[in-house]
Length: 351
Image (cartoon, rainbow, N blue to C red):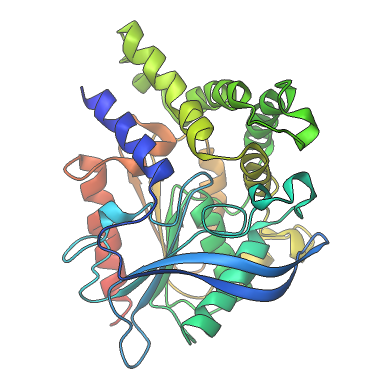
């Protein structure tokens, strides 16, 4: 039953439209946005959601950034009075990065003509949101999980000192050949669906997305997790859950563009491939929470991040749930350890 409950949580987070605890939900419009790799978009939308209130000093904001396939309200189960992100104390901002949710994306109508975007494009758009929509010159903390950690690291590199601290769950500062091969296989399965038609489809290539999720599934977990699926029905349900979620809630081009952004990320690219130089720009405290059984982000990438940061604390939480160990629900050991460490770190930034 615990396996089933977990997959119900994953499915809910993938399609979660909003949280009942949200104070405000809206879109910020950038009149003309220039993309890093070329192309531009007029009136580009950046969707956001908030919890709590911004104080008069405007120094209690926390920006929480989602993983590759997650929506802006992905962390709602961590938000509330006394929880990981306490909305009685802090002004919590969730964002749909460029290319998904309520932000501008290929599925809006441009399809394959939508510009290819990068993690740095996401962060530049978020900076516009925070400074122009909310009038912020600093955030208490910026953090996120998986691709959310990519974005958080880029915040530290591109806008040094804007955040007083960074919170990185299952993180890295770049993708490697391992993850690139996974994404290439996932996207190949989608594009090989006859319904895809080079991205100019009339109906979604649903079967391609469902089967692509099957390719991704075993990389998200540990062998220990897979071994516990002794019941064939549980195994079949688990291996199809991610792809079924994609097919229900994503436009195919939007999904492909999003995973390519994660696939191609490297924080050192603007610095000639010198990661030490890139990460030397981060001179604020950083909390790393990594999974003991992560197969999506290899441990050496997190080691590289840890070794090249100046002020870092790393906690390896024990889990058999692989990369998705950070998604465990309240009451589990993983949730408790992640929540406690994150809450303590954020409090320390005010001292």
